[in-house]
Amino acid sequence: MDILKKITEMRLEKGWSEYELAERSELPQSTISSWYRKNLVPSIPSLEHICMAFGITLSQFFLDDRCFSETISQEQIDILKRWNKMTKEQQKKLAEFLDSIL
Image (cartoon, rainbow, N blue to C red; front, side):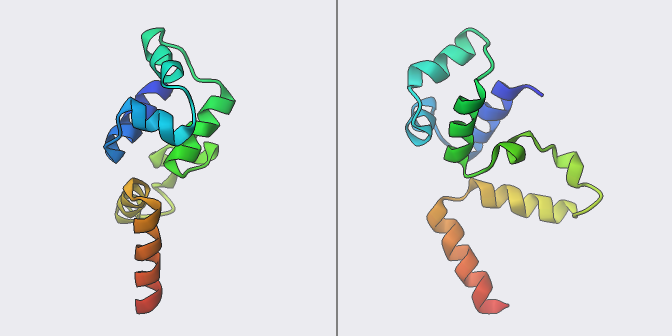
């Protein structure tokens, strides 16, 4: 797995700049930039901060979509991807809406 590529993909899905990721993850932007300049793999504590910013666990970060292919449908995977792109407030509103119709 290319960790930097995955971080970039997730950041772009959210529409965040490197600066926004740094702010949300509480990491110095210089640290994040150096990963890319020097092609370094983030430390586990740094990666935990990145995951916190994205609202996911470290396990979720390393989980491959193919792991779900036999247990959930592609539609469910797509919904989870959309959920991960939402802000916390959007997630809360969607959860409230779903509660109201179920």
